[in-house]
Image (tube, rainbow over all chains, first blue to last red; front, side):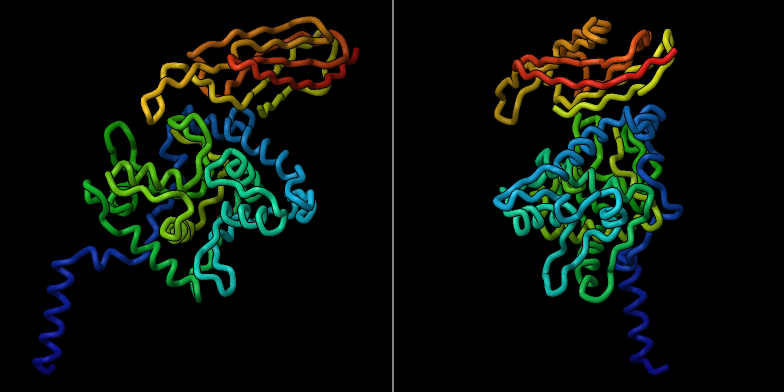
Length: 263
Length: 106
């Protein structure tokens, strides 16, 4: 071994010791994978399991109505093109977020519904986090309930996946915390009265008892960012989409639970 | 206002049947303030009535203590075929209505 290679090895070892975060930035899934519902109390679990008592099902029911409601200049409904969602939308949500060929930013399920509405139905745009968009998203994603997410993270999507992973490990806000410090390294432990979950997105949109309504994954991102006293970006920004892709990969074999119920 | 009703479509005469209804509503308590510090006026579903073939069989009067998207569960004796009609009204005067048929045999 030449002195130069030895020096290089020393430098690598020193860097590894000084910056353990650099090594931790690999994309890893928590082991074993646990859905957020496993961290919830018995009452919340019962609420999610009962398809009638689950308040999120009201949004699914509203989404089903909206699916068949004509909108826009052509008076086309979602059903005019896609027919019965139970058949046409089964498994669709498992692929999102994804990158359209030639596109530079990811599109998630909310984004696809908004795009369809504006470009195909020529209808008034739906705002992110609006009741209508939440209802439609919940309805479409509900058709994939029980199926694991299968997103593409290679090829052109790779850079988005890596950006999402980097965001996941980036320390942020006055608390100087990254997503990983709670949800990757300390899940299962207590944070005040709460048990820290693994932070998966498989049940979204969810009915949160704290919100008393249904909210999107991006709304949850904003809650977490507020919790660590970091800047909250608006829903639908590219950073959130990259993070959503990383989380979708990270949730592995966990089945979609939409509409989930959480405290 | 979206509502969901769950009850048996068929029953035998004299059978006690379970009726479940869930209504999408914010049930604003009147105790909250918005980001600008202004009071958010109270707006709850204050009355819900269920009529079975025109006869009132159940009535609920709700207030600030009931959570958003109220879910009610009650029992009715099935005595004749027909329908159950649910009517409700909130503090803003918004009304909602749903109906569900039932076939009673025997």
